[in-house]
Picture 1 (cartoon, helix red, strand yellow):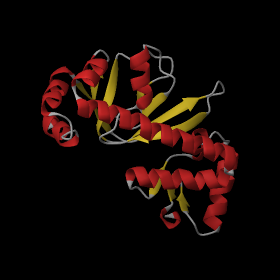
Picture 2: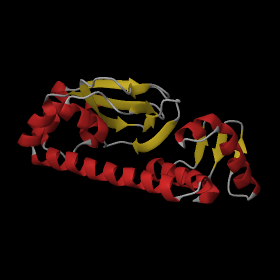
Picture 3: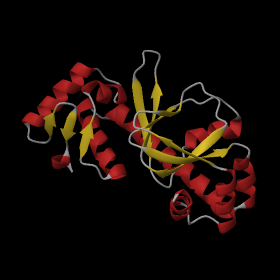
Picture 4: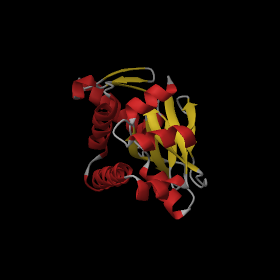
Length: 211
């Protein structure tokens, strides 16, 4: 089943490369909330996402998180690729937003496959382009958008990546990802609820009316 899922996910790559991925990769699963990558960690392998959703964030010294981007099926973390290529420690955290299946590939194969397989090189370059565009969006949101607008954008981005119309998590979880305080996020959520734009229960937000 694992091999079938992998080949279905990355069938756009060269058949020879698919075979090498199966031979060299290490299949691994993560439960919701588990860390795949931690800041300050040396990366010996980079994950290709077979199934699930991964949240990539950056923390400040106070422990607040800034959401950088999500990774879903058929994607790889550009930041982990960069660390692999430069042999540096990770500058980001990667956390399973839901149960995740990945295949961990050894660092040393990154450069080899870039030179050997044109479709792999194209995939990696496209990954860098996509993540760079998402990081620019994050910078623009922080610089030019009010926090209530960023909160709505968070839900819209979540829907575009996952298709989910609900969020399960605490107000503190949201605050950390938006680099704010729980009190401010709670107040903004209550405002959106009073405006009829969302519905809330304990640790649950239905944001379908925003879409």
